[in-house]
Amino acid sequence: MTSPLPSLEALLIAPACEVLLARFGRAATVATLREELARLRASRRFPVAADAVLDLAADALARRFAPVQRRVFNLTGTILHTNLGRAPLPPEAAAAAAAMAHPTSVEFDLATGRRGERDAPISELLRALTGGEAATVVNNNAAAVLLVLNTLALGREVPVSRGELVEIGGSFRVPEIMSRAGAKLVEVGTTNRTHPRDYQNAIRPETALVMRVHPSNYAVTGFTAAVPLADLAGIAHEARLLLVEDLGSGSLVDLAAWGLPHEPTPRASLAAGVDLVTFSGDKLLGGPQAGLVVGRADLVARLNANPLKRALRLDKGRLAALEAVLRLYLTPERLSERLPTLRLLTRPAPEIRAAAERIAPALHVALPDHLVAVTPCRSQIGSGARPLDLLDSAAVTLGGDALDSLAARLRALPIPVIGRIGAGRLWLDCRCLDATEEPDFVAQVSSLL
Ligand SMILES: *Cc1c(COP(=O)(O)O)cnc(C)c1O
Image (cartoon, rainbow, N blue to C red; front, side, top):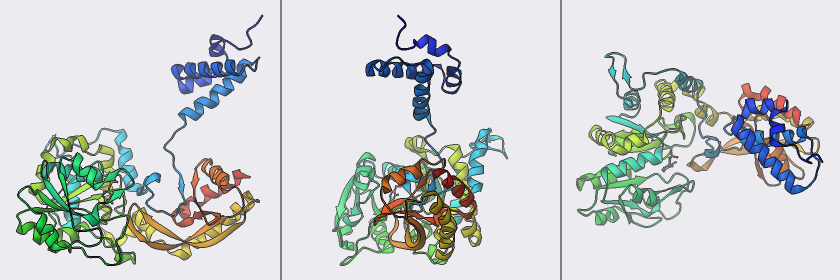
């Protein structure tokens, strides 16, 4: 009697298996074929032809090894969406990172032919852009805070206002990073009001430095009081202590110049007397993931001498991308054309509405069961920047039933489209759909039909 299932050996020499072996390799193909055979054996629905088993294995392999990191259309209405990679990079930065296909001068001084200082170009640019004496750069802002606290406050106390004990996205919490850095958090003041005397009373011989944290993703309003930064610097310096600030997003330029809500800048913090300021590279700055630390040269030298710096340092690809982005800031008058983050933030609502009106007909044709409309909406900056300030925008909204499955169909497109469900509709905020991307968008939408 012939076996109701083909043997593994027979499957491996079948012509249809050749493409699986070439694409996924022998080990993964064999393991998947074994799994499929075991599943079929357990389901007892015999007989099964070899090609049918190979089809099942091909699907399983494709599912398992499909590229996970893919370009998507971010139509969520959140510009710096942490789950969608935060800031989109300018082409200059993407090109600089792509040059990593070749050997690079990342740690090599081309003038002397000797070993070079890895962070020197970034430090030079940040000096020019913030007025700080020196700068260093690490994996992200969480790493920057960790490095600063571990270097300057190991085994000692750090007073922080209770109004600033922030949690960012669940995994960065000030009290936890403080204890992992080996410093001891001393809570001062209350959630809504902290006064100069609260800090002054907390300062003891065990105090290493005073810390200010920008309450990025929430706002304390109503009956509130905080100590102005310059006053806090005065309090720290009078006690011969340092003041360090975690600025969170930290925009290198004053966004108010582009009609956007004001966000504090590292330059203003340093001018107010902060000794070291840390901020993210991929939030409002609009660059790759990175943590930047700017301030006093002697303190930056101590950060660079900490063995943790080596563990937290930036790879050459992101260093090159960050350098390219910082270079764009040398000409702020052209920044809103050249830096995608700023271009998206300043995109006028009528222009976004026009984009929504251009793509709506294709959605109307492709999704006859859904009511398609162009609707005003509000975008948010995201990544903890100005959570209460929303920007006027426009969306294509899709009404009707089964919005979850519609959202899933949009996510299954060749370039997945990510929207947002709310108020009984699926919202596609068109702010982050660049005019140059519209043809790609429209072309793939017609495949929904
Ligand atoms: C975002 C943020 C962080 C964490 O920055 P990452 O670059 O994501 O590590 C830390 N502190 C504040 C205040 C933030 O807003």
